[in-house]
Image (cartoon, rainbow, N blue to C red; front, side, top):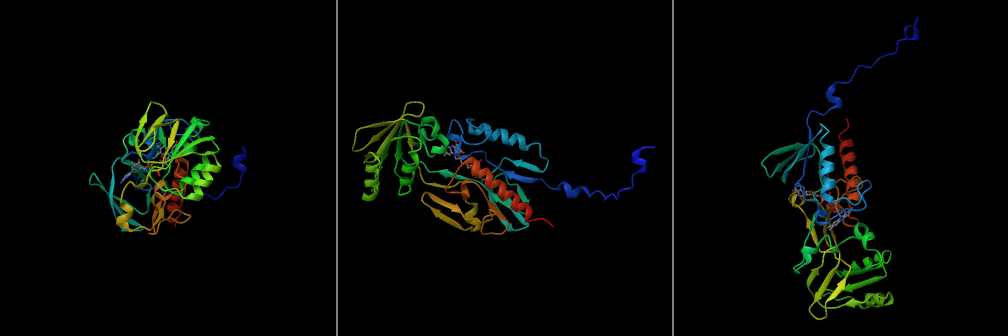
Length: 297
Ligand SMILES: Cc1cc2nc3c(=O)[nH]c(=O)nc-3n(C[C@H](O)[C@H](O)[C@H](O)COP(=O)(O)OP(=O)(O)OC[C@H]3O[C@@H](n4cnc5c(N)ncnc54)[C@H](O)[C@@H]3O)c2cc1C
């Protein structure tokens, strides 16, 4: 006699129909493949992917998504959105119409290069925005900061954690006397005048050319140009936005839902304060979970 033959029969639930486990339609994932950090040689601060070229991380992510039959990668621009919760329609640049019950917008922002020769050419190598991304590589060296407004004062305070040698370029701005006094107290020189050109020498080094002062060399230059959303879908939808010192950001609640029910937002498009790949991924996860849980029956 086997033990199984003497065991009491357990009630068996009927297996759920297949459609419960596998959604019939694949969720479309539209992307034109031009991430904001594509100008940088290496990406830093993303656990498991440190010091890799940004486009390599993206290619790896796309490869990993390919094993999920529930996702469809669409290499096209989302051009317009119509409909409402449970019945959205996204028209792509290729003329395809994609249906969705929920939408997550994460088309990022585009940095607006100032009209200074050499700025765009150095963006991502000798001119960078973020010490958390690139500070380690140049810690203890001579940093420059291009003043872009009162928010630049916070960067001065932040940079002390990486270097004691910082030069501030006023770039034609009027820096208020109280901030100048604080900069003097911190032994930070201010170079006045307009920047007319930035020359690069390979690697991080840059020479800042000014209209009223001699050329000035630094080991790396930090700058924060204005930015704008990479697409205008939020505009045509009339989504609520907030003003930031450098542009606008979509307004979301703690579940990452925007002002229109069923539309969520994640990443730099809705995260002006702490732009990074890690925070974009985290917000994307929150948006995805919130969207899915809002459809539970
Ligand atoms: C020079 C530089 C260096 C940086 N270095 C780092 C770093 O080392 N580490 C780090 O964590 N962060 C770094 N960042 C910040 C990082 O790039 C962003 O925080 C991050 O890319 C935000 O991710 P996202 O998904 O919101 O936007 P993005 O990465 O910009 O992705 C948006 C995607 O949407 C696509 N898209 C745009 N419009 C449409 C449309 N209409 N339809 C379909 N697709 C569209 C774009 O092509 C793009 O692929 C850096 C930024 C810059 C500028």
